[in-house]
Image 1: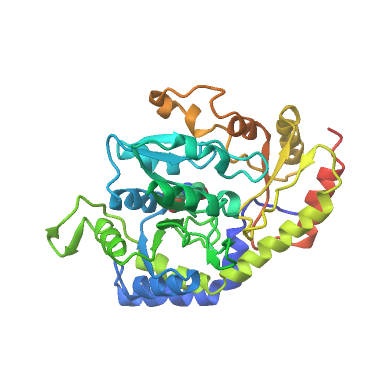
Image 2 (image 1 turned 30 degrees about the vertical axis):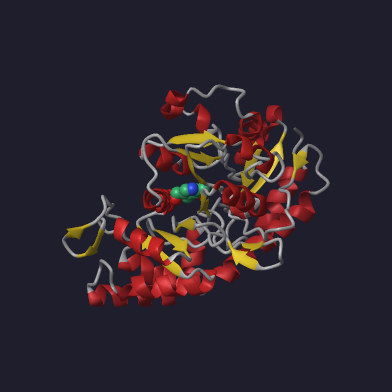
Length: 375
Ligand SMILES: *Cc1c(COP(=O)(O)O)cnc(C)c1O
């Protein structure tokens, strides 16, 4: 019996155990649990890895989005443009500040913001655009940058699923996800590309003044202790998490390569299966395969899911309900039919097991089971 998980954190830990245990022990010995030296070293190492001038760590990816919006002064009366087909945190951070989330639908094939619909969403109240690099592949940032520059609007990238993805600009320059817009946000939730052993997040920016403000916002709005310049947050990366992330950052490119290999296996083995649409690759971004998400006919998707689950193959639906139809956001008065592509994708997407420890045996079993599915 092959045991398969959506994300296998245990096998990865066992592989890295000596390094991780030593790093954790060093923090325990230091007892510098808050803002210990690992936090600053990790920020520097992540800045180096991403090519971002500044990295400010924080408590989680949601807080990163919140702090980014706060640093731009987003609040009541403002509009922030994003997509309805995302994890709710993207929208939640906007709404939490009293700003209005304005949605632009996504593309049916690459799941990211449909840039053809972006400009018409801009109004004099628009303060920021928050593109999401869903499932690990960058949104079409070139046109988003052009439109944002033309209207003098900031871009906050939700790179929570795409840390390590490489975006190729129109002039050929390569940039890492999260370093293309004004501010980039990422998450170290355990299942993410670079996952800690608890919550964590970070902000990236090349802007010196914004970096300083973001750092203050995440520390109670304070640059100097007990002097509070902004209404801030208590949002810090624990030293223990930073020490673990320092170890794991050294393996991030290998982690991504392992995900890409698993994705290649899926792609080869499933390309001929009728009724499945495999993830589309875009020319301007690498894919880190935070998720390997296929599309299945809406009337077959749940049956395939059940069939796989009966064979002990877990799958997941990211996401079953688009943000504009969630109960908490009914006050925005969006209706079913407003963002038809996102709504349809919620009925069609199915994410297959994807992590850094997938074996050929597991991949063979999963793909053979799908190929032989009688449904
Ligand atoms: C995970 C995630 C977040 C939030 O990150 P947390 O660390 O869980 O707060 C935000 N946006 C997207 C797209 C995510 O996948």
